[in-house]
Length: 128
Image (cartoon, one colour):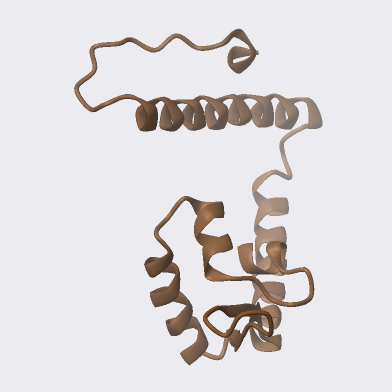
């Protein structure tokens, strides 16, 4: 999905995907080779620089994503059919707060050395 989101019609490089997920480019290369073997991804040499590959989803991948999206939508509507809009909004706000706190912790953890005795305090906007 990241490849499809980042692709602006010319494909996307592995470095861009690696940066989006904060992972090593070699991991992206290994995984995209596997996806190419499954015919879910096309990798083409960049016209600007032959050292780089531009990746894009194949029609087979798009069809699979559509099938999964339809299944997800059906499952979601079944799971939440009994939940009113106010409760769902409340749940979404709480989950968003949890995601912000987790992201904040990852950033702090990355900045500080392991074994630091500092305690974390949350900015007020995380807890709203």
